[in-house]
Amino acid sequence: MSDSKQDARDALQEGISLLDKGEIDGAIALFDRAIKLDGTLVDAYLSRSEAHNFKGQSGKAVTDATKALMLDPHSAGAFVDRASAYINMGNYERALADANEAIALHPTAAAHVNRGAAYRGLGKVIMALGDFNKAVSLEPRYPLAFSHRASAFLAIGVHDRAIQDATAAIDLDPRLIQPYIDRGEAHRHKGDLEQAVRDASTVLGIQPGLVIGLVNRAAAYLDQDNAGAALADCEAVLSQDPENVLAINNRAVALAKLGRVDEALESLGRAMILAQSEEVKAHLTMVRDRIAGNRSES
View 1 (cartoon, rainbow, N blue to C red):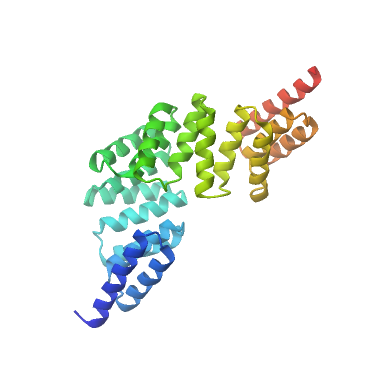
View 2: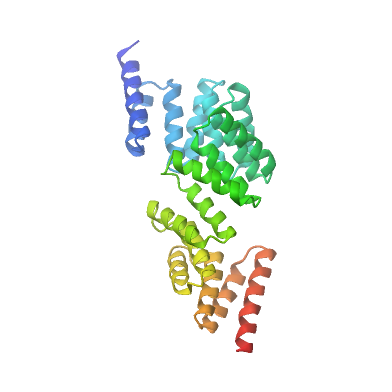
């Protein structure tokens, strides 16, 4: 092996070590070096694709996974990485195609999780659950399998199972955010509002200012009749995303509970203009009419 190829492999291994530690930018720099030294090193493209997926750089992840497939058309890992990127991009049909290729080549837990996520994105939750179950059976300590299955159970209203799987995912990897989000929402739907607030607060402790954490905590606060805390979370969301319909809706409900009805109705009027679906508009109209009706009765 030439010195440049060995140096490339050394850089790749150093990069993988950094990636395992969560030092993504440093890892990418080493993968860049490995590829510069040896442009045929498939694992360097695969590892850089994985790193780009971690950073949410889905387009770059697709490019690297595709390059890996050009070098090795039978690389199951490349199909897995590209499917992950397509899922993050919301391109579920392409994700499903790549996940199927990965499973045909090497049916790993990660490949089944990706196919399940693609099915779920396409609205086929029962088929998704089949893949998540398979992933758990293949790798019983794979946190993402439990996390995705929790999300699927939450989507179909099976809240106890969602809580169970989300807790399993958290026990395996407490750094994951999605299981806390899903567990909190499952607890909220079951009426365990204190736990819902705790889980949403944990999400915000891991990633301060995360919109979904603020939105979910505001909803739990509203269910607790803690309108002041709900209003604060809604305002925090709207400072980042002024057109967030859920936050506008919850802000209006909080304002109404605080007796600031005119502000509440104005907020709902803005949300109705922004709403994209007739279903959302109908819900906002119902909330507006209820608030206006309560004012006329008082």
